[in-house]
Image (spheres, rainbow, N blue to C red):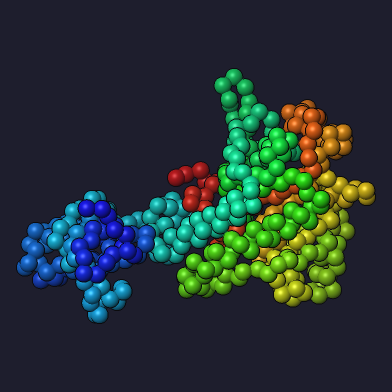
Length: 429
């Protein structure tokens, strides 16, 4: 007999369920179990006189043991969980659980030590249900827009982009590095004539950052597209992508997110508001008295980033804010620049946190070589420069952190939304 998910059991029929024993009341004449799988819970009621064989099995059970139960599911208005229960005719113990080493109020590091136990809750399961819907919707949107999905290598021969913040490792008889971005290979796909691509994959950053939003390994959703006329084409596409994905999450899980996390899932309107970096600082000072030294005004400070949440809501009534016109020293060498040397790119801020850096890329070989030389990269990016020697269309793109999106959606920290968090002090389990 095939297993039925608890959410799909049918009253009046015999069902087979499998899951964890979440609660156990073993009385003299009756036993009541609550069985949980990822889809829901079901009460299982055993009348011991009728089923002494099952009573003997129940006597062996502990909370969080794993069982199989087979029997009819009937309606019972006294049962709080959906008004139904199973009256099992068969039961099998699949695994006996030892006493749990975690309590509900355990500290975050203890929870990370026993992450597989920490995840056994509706709240934590919802993280990954919502994330699955979010990523699935973004992938679907790209596919509907004639994008191809590619998978770029994570073992690379040269330190990507700036050469800093990369993990070095031994690759047979030479050095290799873990990729800190699929950026170079996304652009290689443009040079290959793929036109529109996306990738969902791991990203590695050797940053000793101890914040609620940084991790040394995370999942990126990266997009690159050819034949754009401006970086604003990229911005418009990202806004449409996020609107589509958040609408899907809101429709499927909005009520549960509100119930378990107390947050509304807002489907953003189009277009997203946009401000130049210097105008952001001007408004932050005028509205909220926030000042920074002129030396810091070519990039967003962390405090300014946080204040953008308030600024965007107060000025535009919108959770998202595109910020443009960053100084060239704060942008990667492959960003195209205008006639004044200003990079043609942007950051996207959501709920006070940067979730994207995007740009139109420099596709002209000579100009790109000049900008790489300015950054002192030289031979480090020679393989990348070769992509542009034989013709390449104008293009641009962006990268989104899937974990950071999930974190902001649910109001959590990065440790809580990654299936297994990796940071400077954590590489286990």
